[in-house]
Every structure is written in C-alpha cells, then in structure tokens.
Length: 322
Image (cartoon, rainbow, N blue to C red; front, side, top):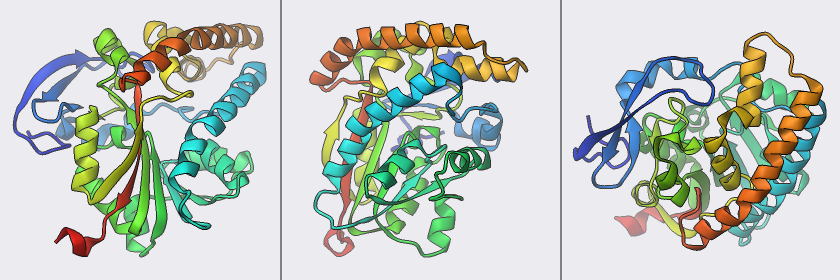
C-alpha cells in the first residue's frame, strides 16, 4: 500500500480510530502516516466499496426549528465573510466566469454565490442533498460526478471544492479529472481540514477534522500543495483561517455531543424528534463556545497553523509544462 496523495511507499501505522461523531458503525479503522508528505489516511482498499454506508441519513444539513434558523443565519453570515469573500478575490481577474462547485451538498454556498451574481452550477452525488437544495429553492444543482462532467466535455473557468478531497480514496485520479474540466488559465479553489494545525496536533485522534471513516485522506499543508501542483496547478494564495470551520472544529472535538449536525443525525436516526427547547439551548451553548474559541482559531491561523487550508490555484498552460 502506497500513500494515496503522493504515492510514496514510506508509510507507517498511526492510530486506530472509530466513528466518534456520527456512530454509524462500531468498527475500528487503522490509519497510516506518510513519511514523505505527511498525509494521514485509511486503507483505501478496505473502505473503497463501502463509503456510502458511512454517511448517515440526514447527514446533509437543513434548517429546522428555532435552533435551525439561528444556525442558518450564522452559517450564511460566516459563509459570506469567509468562503464567498475568498472566492470573489480568487475570481477578481475574470469577467462573469463560469464556475462549478463539486460536492456542493445541500447547496448553501452555491445558492448564496448565485444570489451574489456569480455564474455558478453545483454538482452533487447525493440525491438526498440535491432534493434538500431544491426544497430550499436552490435549483442550480445537478446530480452527478466529475466523471459525468468529463464525459460531457464540460469546461469551466473555475472549479470549487469545499471539503471534498478528504472524502476520496483516489485524490490523484480525481484531481486529474478536475484538471480536464478547468480551462487553461482557469482557477481551482478548495478547502480541506489541516492536519498540520495546532488543534490537530493538540487533540490528536480526538480532532474533529479526522471524522473517521468519512475522511479517507487527511492532508498536511505539504501533502495538499504537492497534490495540487502535481495535477497541473500553480498555487496563488492560501489561507488557514476559516470563520465558519476552525473554531467549531475545536469545540466539536472537545464536546462532540454538542455538535449540531452530529446530535441531529443521532436523534433522527433513532426515530426521535429533536426537542424544540433542548435543541435551542444546545444551539445557544454551542454558539457561545464557538465564539469563545474564535481567538484561539485566529491565533493558530496567524502562525499558518489554522484548522483548515483554503487555496486558490491556476491551471498552467500545458505547453509550458512540457
């Protein structure tokens, strides 16, 4: 077995992990560490044909009740100042670029970007997520995979991948296909959890960013940069601060039962209905702890060790690379 990110044979066993956050399986999974790029990963052959069973019903976030409305407001507020702001800066040199967001889930970002005037389409493999997006009036999303886009001969000025690469068994193959649908000189914009972060090192196997077994590959900054460069892209900008993701990851790592999505999935999976008052109080407590954790999240990112990595890269002219 070689590293799925850089193909190195220099790997060693690391931790044995369980599904700590959604409890869809009681199985234990061994992780491996690449001695060259620093990626931490599961045995791809062990999980490749089983990935769908690790995603619980109701995995895709949807607003429900007072707590859901509060979370919906917060998610959109931080998305606008975080992800959307980053994407706008990365696309600043274009005039009305054609964009594709792969793995857009229930379409929160896609719908927001569309309202902001970005010419964007979403692509999502989950029919449940697409149905949820449509129920919220987000109709610019289609069901499918990057393979479908390649087969149709599609091409875009920018492809956006927010929290996609960590879910893949074969990231190098996937990125090769992404490169085929990004026009030369076009942009790749992505985000993944950063296992080089302070909180990842502090919390170890308890870190939320590992999310075993749904996160097959966990990237160090070096691993991600190598993957992007080897796929024909030149990195232009990186950030390790995320207003939406970094502080919440820290809180959910320490107190997993407070995590809004995880608690909702477990309650609905047990056939119960979330209590309105309990959900609201839980949501307010979680929100307060996230606010309290923001200074730490800002500090670790100030040293380039934030809990996520966002980057924007340009697809190089193929003739220049030869």
